[in-house]
Each structure stands twice: as C-alpha cells, then as structure tokens.
Length: 504
Image: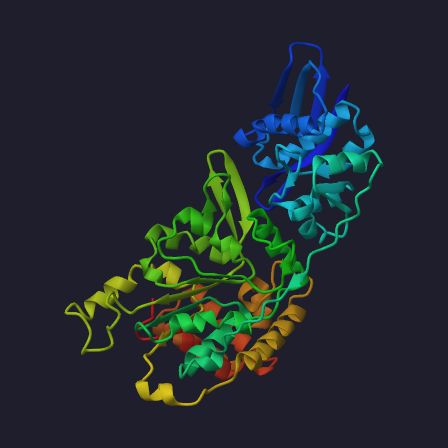
C-alpha cells in the first residue's frame, strides 16, 4: 500500500503541485527520499524521525521509501518536512488516508516536533485552492495563507497538533487573515525647498508610472526628492497587493502574515551584484526589480552601477517581466516597476560650478554620463536637471503643494487610467500603452502634433522616444482632467525629454 500526501515545489512565483508517496515495505531498515531532492529535503528524514520519536511513535523495522512526484522536478527547501511526515503517518495508519490526500501541507519540523514557519505559504494556498484541497502549514505562516479565501487554511503549532486534528481528538480552527498594513509616509514634498520642476516631474512619473532620471550636483536634493515619492503614490489595488505579496512571501518579507498595501520602494546600493538586482543565485531567487514590482526602484549614483547590471535593465523595463535563466532553472518573475535614477553630472559632481569643478571639465562629464548607454537612457520618459539650492532659499517658508494634495491628483489620474484600460490586464498605466491602443488614447490635436513632429525632426528622436513622449503627454492631460492632448501637454512632455546635458 502506498500512502499519499500533497505539497508544492516553488518555481518562481508559481507553486507547482507535488505528490508525496510513501511506501513501507519488507526489507532491511532504511529511510530513503527520491525524486530530485536537494540537501535540505534529504535531511528531512532525520528531522521526521526525531519528531516522531518525540511523539513516542517508533518507525517499523522496514524499508521506508518516500517518492516526490513528478520525479524530474527539482525539490528545494525545508517545507517538505511536514508533507513527508503526513504521508508517513498515513502509511503507518496513525492518521486517516483520505485526510492526508485531501491536504496540501508545507512546513519545517524541529527535532521536538514543533513546526517552524516557512516561506511561500501564500503561493501554496493559491495552488491548494486550484486543487480544491485544504492547506496545512505552521501556525506562524497561516495568517498570510488565509488571504486566499478560496480554500481553508489550517495552522498547526506542532506535529502532535496535526495528528490530533486528523484523528478528530482536537480539531484545529481555520486560520484568519493577517492585518492589512498601510504605512503612511512621514516625508512631505513641502520639506523640499525650491525644485518645483523636479516636484512636477515626480508627480507626472507617479501618475503614469514613467521612468525618471535626475542629474544634479551633490546635495541638490535628488535623494530627498526620491524618498518622498512613496508619499504621493496611491495604495496598491487588491490585485496588485496579491501579486506583490506573493513575491514577498517567497522571500519571507511578509510581517506576521499581514498584506501590505503600501507600494514597495527598493533602493539597492551601487555595489549590488547582477543576481541581487535582476535575480538569480541559489534557486534563482527574485531580485530587486521583482521586489519592486508595482512600486519604485530607486538607483542612486546610477552611473556607478556596473555596466553589465545597467544593461540587464533594458529588457525588463520594456516587458515588465524578467526571465532568470540558469543551467538548471529557467524562472520568470514579474517586474512592473517604476525606475527612478539619480546621478551626478560628473565624477567630482561639480561640473556646473567653475569654482569647484575639476581640471578635466567638461570632458569628465561626458565620460561619466557615457557610462549610461544610449539605449538605456532612451528608456527614461522624464529627464531633469536638479540645480543646487541657494542658501537664501533654505530660509524661505515651505512652497508648493503638500504630498497629500499631490497624491490626490495622482490618484485621480490613475483612476482615469484604470477606467481607460478596463478589460486589458496587460495595460494598467499610460506607460504600458502601445500599438493601436496608444494611437487611440494618445493622439494630440493638430497644434500638438505639429510641435511634436517638429521636435522629432529637430532632435532626431527615435520611434521609442516619440511614443514615450506621447505617453507622458497623455498622463499630463489626465492630471489636467483633459480628454484631449493639447499643445501645452505635448510641449511640457517634450521639455522633460529634451535637455542640454541630459540628452542621449
């Protein structure tokens, strides 16, 4: 007789079903696990044996074989402990066989039989719901899994709790979802003195999810401006929150099972490796661009990042997903993020200040910014120069709108886009529009079209740049509450694309 239990193997954000088969047969005493297990899975036999011993359950003097099917799918992680134990208990007739087969289990076992929380409970619950099975997981992981209300989630504190639950001695209650977290930003745009043009660029970028690069001298406020971007972004929608939380669940970033409605804001250091930014390493884990999904990826000191890292951003920016390809794994992750980059105008940072610039000016500025390739620079919808703020301006009272006021305008503009792209899941903001959809929604009036064509001919804009200007103009019109794209909207979009020192 072969006893069966069910679990999952993670492949990117996808949790693939795995059947755990247990056979107890005559022969020399042995405990083997087959089906492409990694080291953590192979060590499960010792943890399971010790946990059963702590419950005074002795293994028979027979050959125990655990098969993880499909056998050609790599199995990684310690979450296979619990399903292996459930299959073995079913084979020993400690728990009913039908209860084990109707459950998707995942969890790590301690030597005393207690269950340790594991990553990936949320994607596992999605798979359990699709298979119409109950999810059994550690109690500490149950709150995040319970957000999938299409299936029942049972959280257990120990293997003994599992046995008592399945045997009917002490049924466990269904888990309840964790709290919805919405962390308000305490940083206000009014804290930034001056820089009204940069604030306007942030508003446009937030409204249409446009990529932005800021170039200015050290201390001009680039990082300060970027840090206030989360305060003007609308909360995650229900669909976006689930997508983002699934990635965070795989990385163990969900706090006490709560779903965060605040958009991610990731700011990796310029010494980060390619695997850290794009994804990879052991198990092809998600990188910073995927952790910034539906949020912001802020890359300060942009030219200081390795050239190979910067060039790998080109394809994910366009497609909204990244394929992490390794010899033994090809994993796809979503990465629909807004890229905000900051850079100094040159190595010393004072190219525009003759009294402080180095002796290599202005050549050093060209050499420094040339670390950003033309094709990558072409993908920035908004390019602005951030001039230094004078000492006299620092004594002035706060100016401009507060973050709350700007956030209201951004949310209204995004609501317009949500209605516009209803029924088109691949398009959510204006920056996603392309093809016939872009032609329908972003055709300017006669005067606006004349200005755009003249600028395209004068500055030799590429087809990509031409379309990105149209998308930005559409966002500016949405912020203005205008159904049509007029000449001022096109002119403002062009002003953020064409700059003397930010051209590419």
